[in-house]
Length: 93
Image (cartoon, rainbow, N blue to C red; front, top):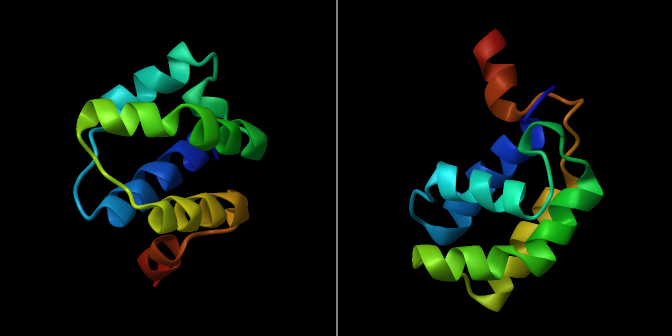
């Protein structure tokens, strides 16, 4: 289950922005914020979304509307890394 929260955030962020968001700058932003992207807790991801994500997105030129940002935060908050994603369920079939 390592890195599942980071991977989920990347996927949802790219969907919300309607473009592919570069992975490495976001990874470095987590490291600079003092969080290990491999072992993120729910609280760490939410704190990053609230405090650091707007600045990171601005540097990358990615624009999220306030509504998209709230939706992203809500989706990330509900994610449970112990449960398989729909993609993982379909891959088993």
